[in-house]
Image 1 (cartoon, protein in one colour):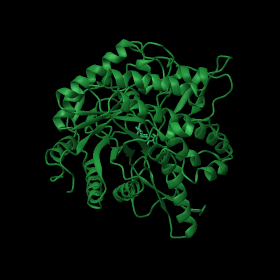
Image 2: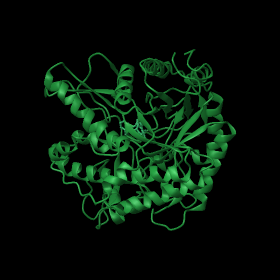
Image 3: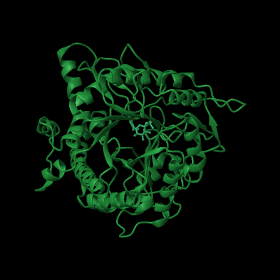
Image 4: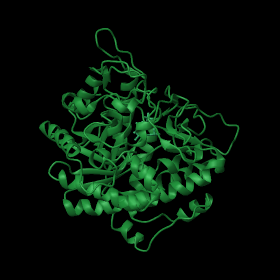
Length: 488
Ligand code: P53
């Protein structure tokens, strides 16, 4: 294996998918707090109330009806409210990460623990204290934190009162929050990610019904512009606060392939790569929109509103590191008859040469080698794979063991692919696998879509002790880290 000494092996989570304690110690609400569960073929739904009292469900990314206000329905189960209660278990969980030998732990700070409505002048001390304790715990074990500032968790108050990221005002609120935490933890955290999977909404536009695409594109592209500005300002600030800070962008790296060698399919896959990955990557790495941006805006009839000075802001806030998630590749074709897969967030045609997970995600380690080479070739920045893994239901045996050879197989393949990419000349510095401890799925709200090395006793309806158990993959990863992947 080709992993350099000092390679950051570890795991990744996000605040709203593990912490629970959704309304504890002054925390404000986010959209996930009104999100009920979905399933393999069903997106999560958000609950709202209409002025006449009627409760309505709006699918994730869907358009909410006029006058609808966020509503927590007391008769429903909201999986993220308590999640796996990392908020009260962090010491135990970090001890388990340390037992596996983690060198890095990717986590996120919940914006609404620090600024509950996003607009306060002063931060919430209880929130600051919680993350300080988490970072001190990590330090005890020499685990380097990699901290995401935004993991899909804009304060709900900003969404409802000023239109969230459609408003330029949100940029200032975000920058104030980022400045607060980067200053507070300057002795404890050096690696930062500004926005998680910033490209998702643009990438997934084609999944929407055609009638909604244009409007959704207008919103996504304008919101993205504001997030790019916010990210660039935070990059600049991070360097001022501590010149040792390293800041990364984070892109969802679903890797597009042409289904066939028909030239139209090849062009379609290239378009998906541009729209899905390079559009956001270029702005954050190169500090400017790519040459194909105008054509993309025209494709969806988008008018982008900018202000004088925006170009300079973007240019001044180029990231140091390119981080991305990799779960699957996908196949594109202009052939409308091609067989498509089923599953949440998997779209495109079925690839006859690979297998699919129970949730319809294409298992393809070679795709990781391919995209690592693509990204390094384009950007020549250090790369981090900050999410990867297999979501699969596991069985907890009577004796407390969990046998998950499928997860070990999945990870072996991806570790080998990374080693090959390093051999190809790619500068890869970290691998933090997703959901190193079982957590609530972002896409479906299910607990049964498990990614962890650590099993958490909790089901899709909220029943269970939340007790933690080591899976077989726990011991496998422990050996892998101890030998820097010489033994896998
Ligand atoms: P879940 C869609 C496609 C690829 C990655 O996803 C995605 C999504 C959105 O669900 O999200 C990332 O939980 C995200 C994590 C998420 C993880 O992938 O749907 O950064 O928050 O949990 C896995 O199986």
